[in-house]
Length: 273
Image 1 (cartoon, rainbow, N blue to C red):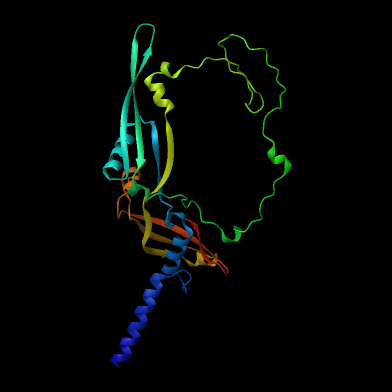
Image 2 (tube, rainbow, N blue to C red):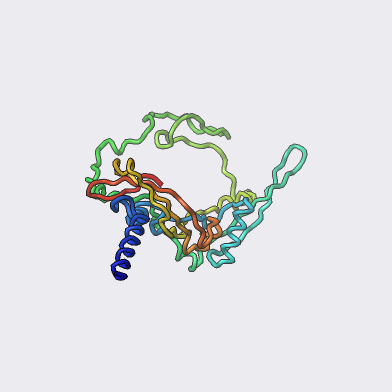
């Protein structure tokens, strides 16, 4: 008799657990919800959470961004140097001076390990992968603009520059402005001439699901093949670029709601999150 009672109690507990982890007759289980979220949302794909960083030599007058570069250097992710160049501007009655900060930034070997060449930005539809290759047509080589037969006057000793609405590809205009020699350039102009920038996408962190907290699918939703859930996710394996440039912290948790639609033969798909 006691054995029968234990079996009955175990069956009841199993049914209760099943009810808490799914809708109706297993219409949407917590496992199905988690799998759909991880497979169908960009935020849970590897290499989707990236942050951009400009390297090279360029002007950076924002103090906060320079401080972030200094932090990245302290973390061993970049090498960083800053030069202060004072620009002098002559007015009618005085000379005004303007500070300009030029930074030199390069990824270290440790920093290069976090470079993401092709960040995931969308979930590709497998049925759309094998599209027919686009053909090239004769008209594809035509560029916008009027094909003007421009006749320019003989060169004159003038400091004026030709102006007007025309494209360089349409008109071969002759500029008659005098270029300053390198020795005549200011230190600020020389610095601007040296500017060279390369942008990198760097791994920030990963998003991982902690748990499917609740599942919601009343009868009226089930009739339409719909369901919803509340899930908790967290930041994991946060990189120095994520901490410093993105402001994310390891282990931080967040709660979101997602809705699902069930398709015959395809299962549950995330409709909104």
